[in-house]
Image 1 (cartoon, rainbow, N blue to C red):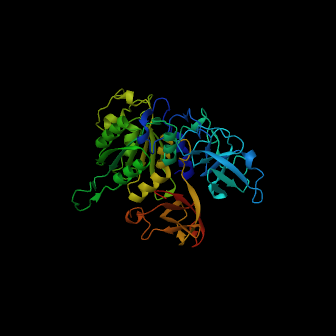
Image 2 (image 1 turned 90 degrees about the horizontal axis):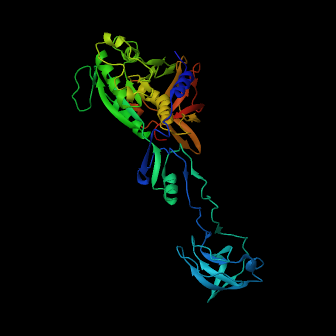
Image 3 (image 1 turned 90 degrees about the vertical axis):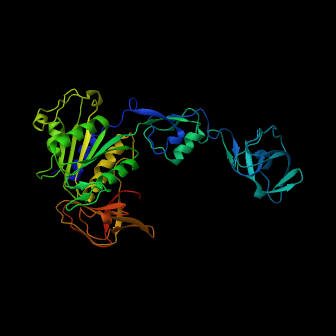
Length: 438
């Protein structure tokens, strides 16, 4: 059984991000929200595009007003009014000023703006009684960005600020990484879809819905493959379908040591390599992580014993890239905790995100006493809030057991108790993993 840190290192090393030459597409700016830039952005425009005013006021020559004060005011002739969007036609001469508004182009000859609150208009003149600083309230051309420099780097997610920058730079066609495809299926004879009436012993497959929602939140495309019976042939067929249609495969259930847990057997039969079988964490101990479908792999002959027909060359052109397989536990909380801890950062890294894909931990004060057995790294789910500027973690009400899906509602953080620590007192400090919408 691996430690959490050992498992994390293995998983992150296995993830090979999308290639920025082979796995990109051009999209319209309107569809860019949440996508990852595959190529750095430059612009032919300076920002600002020209010297402009940061205030409503008067454009002046600093030399004319640098020595003025209430006892020695300066009166300047106003020769032009310059609203935003207007191209000035005059050049300021000594003793002259121009009425100017925020964002308007500075007229030739002017180098400073005096805000209107510090002036007194007088017919076609303006009285200046306060000396400004040199170049005050002037936004100089290219002071924010110089044309030709890198404007946005590759590997960042496009959100509202980046969308605004791209629009301002007139970048309408954006090169982004394609969306990762994530195949999702659940295993178990006891599972049924939500619209079916429950019979004795049956439960609704909630994992598939939760995992699909989490995948979409990451900007990836879920491929829903449904419920698979605890039967080797059916499981092998759905794994092959996933290999031919997705980059990453997520299954829930079938990864423990029960008589009907076939995931590991199928992976080995399909010439996969298992890297992780269990992790020292609670919940989430049974976790299978494997790689499948590498171009050099050959389908294992054991597949014949499972009565599944396959060929070593079948869909080989779709398997030139190794696929990462995550076999998550079947219990709902265990499935989500292992997803948040390992799968979410793996998908984010795979998507081409250069930074910010690793799990985010922070310290908080716990409102309640936190306990664990101490034998494994334990995750306690709840809600992180800010009270008087201090982050506080509150444990979700009800039982903290891996089958209790109900009290996961509004979870945005997991308190982490390391191995060997079985108690953190109320008001004590605890590391928490941020999850969900925090």
